[in-house]
Amino acid sequence: MPLSTWNLEWLNHNSQRNYPIADDATGYDETGTFKIPEDFIVELDLPIHSAINVDPSKFYIRQLVATGTGYSIVVACQDSDSNIYDVASAHVPTSSHTTEYKTYTLGGIEPYDDTAGKVTINNLEAIASQPAGLWEFNPGGARISPDSIRPIIQGVQSLAVSTGAGEVSQRLYGDIELVAGTNIQIVPDLSLNTITISAVDGEGTKETCQCEGDVTALPCIKTINGVSPTPDGEFGFIGDDCLEFAGGANSLNVGDNCCSPCCGCTELEAITKDLERFLQQQANLEVFVTDLQSTVTEMSLTVLGSRIGDRGCITCE
Image (cartoon, rainbow, N blue to C red; front, side):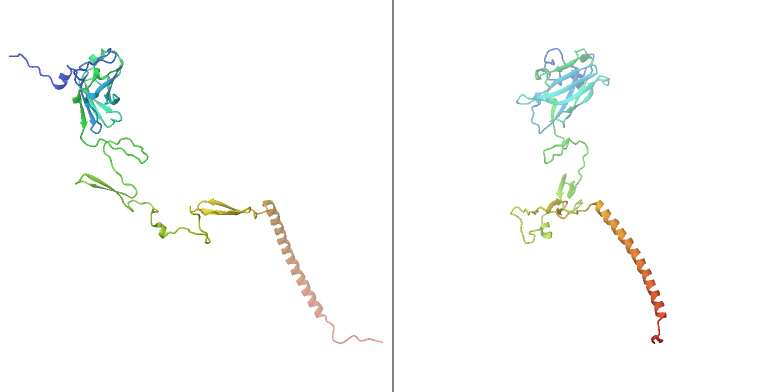
């Protein structure tokens, strides 16, 4: 009968074996200088979108950076054409890693940027004895066990907006609200879990649009004085030496270069002064005429009052 029972839990068990690194992986970098200790990474979970067709056995730790402030881990995958793509990365700061079995986020790298995995670190004592630096690994040295790679099947992870020009926005996460714009109606159906987006006339319209049918209500100009345009719809206005046409804002400006004013401000000022003198002389003349009329009237009254009788003068012999 055994004197005691020793039962290892999941993370304790992993600290004494390669997992989540595959059993057949050596744990050494490409130079054979640096080795990932068995008790450093004790769990790794990396969800990959199911639309990306990848082999879960092709994932491995490609790079590990060891410095005095912490450790950075980069996970990569190798496709069927032997092309290598970085998938996710995590940073383990030594200042905050004060307890064992602490979990850190494995943030996705484009095109795996919708991936949010996790990596659990045990303690840093064994890895701290390894040399510092940037260490590169190949699949034979740090291949990840395939059961640590799982498909994302829980639903929509993010949304992105693509324009007609092919520009794609940043991914949107969390609670996302669809807002209806001009002439757009959005109707959710909770029973069917659907959203219907419709283009509706007058829904949020700011001003009336010019659409088909407006030509009948507002006919265009077909001829000018019976003259029709060219087959391309062009109608020309041709000027001469004096007459000039120029386009304006919603207008056609017609100018006469031969009848421009020949007088400037100096000449107009001289004419204005002459007119002012004529007005003054007119006033003086009106005063003189009034005085002359009074004199003539007075003389007429005097002469008529001393008029001689009808009889003629007596002539004495």
